[in-house]
Length: 123
Image (cartoon, rainbow, N blue to C red):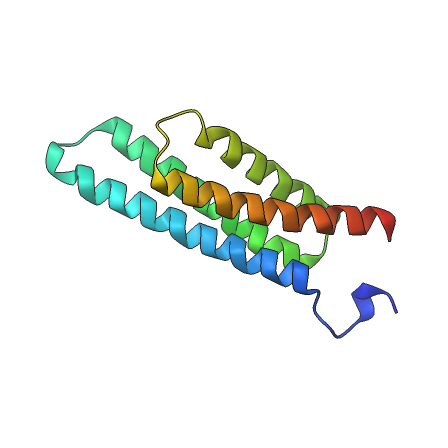
């Protein structure tokens, strides 16, 4: 039976959705921690720009989590793009433990989304 009409959820898709949602929560926490840590140092436009970018990243992760549930090919492409940008940007600044953890999470999600991408193309 075709997956669209199946009552069973694809475990790869479901796992990718949950991990994207987890990633969104992590990035929201990073943004909040950044604002709290920098709040005592005076108002800096740079910190607010960074916080907005982090919130935008969290929103992109949340959209990917939701979109993968819609089963559209466009959302698989969006997920691949968001992950590629996140993985690339991980290496453009100082690399610490938090970077390593989010990178590993991104790589796991990437593997799952690639499974979805290739299963859509072949089946």
